[in-house]
Length: 109
Length: 113
Image (cartoon, rainbow over all chains, first blue to last red; front, side):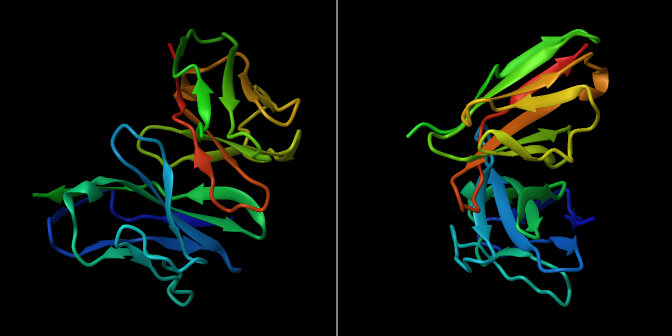
């Protein structure tokens, strides 16, 4: 069965510093990878997906099939980036999401 | 437009009781998903509807859990003989036909005492 691992439960970064949230997955085929974000008192929402190759709110993520990773990066952290971040995947055309345990990102002013 | 809504927002029930959780998806969305999120964990898939039928119910933990979507819109998650381990936030999400993005509701926090 597929699995998503987010090794950091908590991550604190100074404002203006680079951010990297780690995500690794285990699946023998070609999954579709997503990052979802939950800001304080808001609902879970899609941040980005690897297929679209977009940059949203300055965040990017590259799918590395060799390392089975989909790390989320931003060059300069902003205070409004403080939130809970979840990496997730779908496989084989089945749309159900498999989530990691999440990383709480705190940006220190 | 209105997003996914879930009622109630909070539900406290006693062990052994029956509960129903409701989800109103975004109008026109054909796919509807239920997830459960326990403290400190990511959301865990329960069941997925495409229209009125359950396309995948492999995440339902046991036969105390059941969900319906009789008219292809509103869905109800039903839990019989609740146990303390059922305490969690139950999330509903919907997506349009062919869409990859799931739009989540605010969740129902269920507490079984």
